[in-house]
Length: 376
Image (cartoon, rainbow, N blue to C red; front, side, top):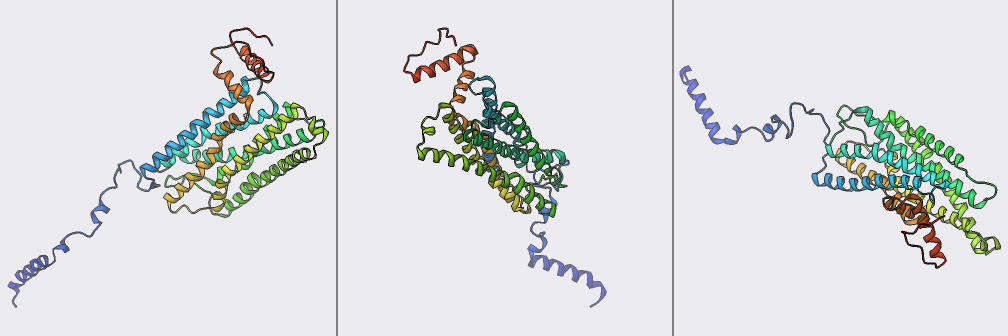
């Protein structure tokens, strides 16, 4: 074969190869997708941002449920504070603790819940590392304050009913116990400021890190100081309280038969606060258990769904307290009547009408008409 036929022969072989295998000329699958930019990507978008992978339907459902809980929590707890502040019937020492718990729920509703929903709906954290630490700190502050508030309520109710002559919580003591509860909650939640933060891929961690420091904080602060010890003390005081009530009722003693109205109201108040304790423990226990579990955040979709579920359950505690208070506390319901009728009657007349109507109902007397001037 001479040198002049070489180029012709190579050109003929190249044509035969392309004709026999036409697929060889097409690029490998996925080649063009690798070269094209991702949908929605722009010049200002960081390609390393985390996408949580939540579907639009899941984001819409989460927004609706979270929005309803947020609205009930904000309006309900604000109404609790307003009713107790304005209504004279509800201005008792135990309700000082109720106002403090409502304020803690308002702090959580305003300073934590909206940012968590923003993170899950947008798919990444947009507010920086400092705001991430602040939001997580508030998320731990609320249960810490409330569980120590419930412990203070349990101690006060137990001794006020069992030893009514020897122990009575004054308003000044209630204020000091409230202050101590807030200080304990703020102190034990402070390590969250160092364990959380926004990473380089714009992700605010859902759970505690699995490092030695994260495990120490999870076991020492979460399980022992924020959950285990206060819960055991609360259960102990209420067990002592209800044992005393049960024994007094079964023995049918003269003291129990002649129990005055004040003592009976103390028993009812203790039962209402025990319902608050059960509601708190059932709502926040999944959140604490998941944080102690230290789930690995490698699959962001599963991590975000798990975090969304436990946060829903814990946040429902803030929304359910005003509803429970409305159901079990008649004075709170009458206080809501004062607020709703504020535009129609003066405040003094409303209080007189409600109290006089209650007395007339108990004594089978027809109450006076609203337009008549009633004097206390």
